[in-house]
Length: 454
Image 1 (cartoon, one colour):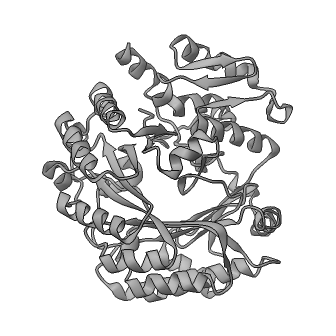
Image 2 (image 1 turned 60 degrees about the vertical axis):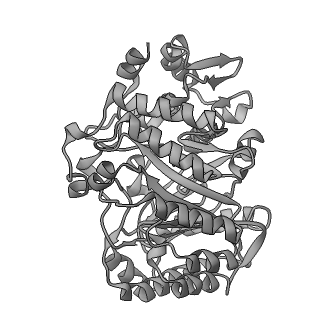
């Protein structure tokens, strides 16, 4: 049965960090003027009640990891740090000029690239610069991504002093053969060292990111990686499916051959066995790809139905307004999305012209907002309902018809006015969301846009 389900449902599909997904943004209808207005509306509605979130993209890396799909610039020249931080702070000042009140920052997430490429002094300059024109919300939550090979104790200590309590370390896999293929040589000792430092300093949530389906990865590699991970007892884990999309990532994923990448049943076994090992070690499944101990805030948010998902990933609380700063970052006003320019040169040019460095965007329609809520419910709580008439839309019968085969396969349960994803159906939640994706159904992609769902 597992094989037939894989054959049936392993199709290209979005990961739904947004709805509409980026390929379906109506860029021709987007204007910077409307974007600014939606930012101002969202800020007025939510700043004093929820606060706002900031995602800051720090794109520099010293070497290329071939599994990575993030926007990055490979360099060993650390003179790039200061001008980039200055540009990000200038972008932030442009957003602050739109606000009629002092921003209350609830969340900050530093992503990349490699945030710990930057020196302690430059990171301090960034964070203190933000708060010259903003305040911390009462229940603020700051996090960053750390590379185990270059995260120093000084990084961890200074960011802790600046209010950071969560850190995630990219582990991927401990197999030397896999690490060589993905160009990420990273001994277990390095991961253990930074994990112990973070715990000693006082971080309350330490995460490790693991990936299954990497080139040359076999079942023993996944088992060994999870056994080593268990010994370090991170509070939360991401267990991602490797997205093999060389047509998007170009030469970055050509350090190995297509046949070196596990597929279909072989790849699914890596996930199923890995997931069972996580369950055996008291990790609980939270949304898609994520697991947490009961003591972690992500687990508590899932239990209390407060889990949220946006371009930063899963969060234990919701903010209506998320501003992305830095090259390629995506902002979310709830009513619209805007993505920054993707190259550092064009980003700098816009900043120097005192213009928001926006490349493209999308203003959500009333229909988009309804579908977005359903997809968020499915991705965060594995269920959704249209009992509230505000969440009903005319295509519901069509959606249920499309889901009928999934119901027969035991992946979803029909409720009176809603659906629930079963335990068996959780690995197929992206497929279930696709049944609600009206834009995808109205215009199927003609080229390869998405990774495989399984």
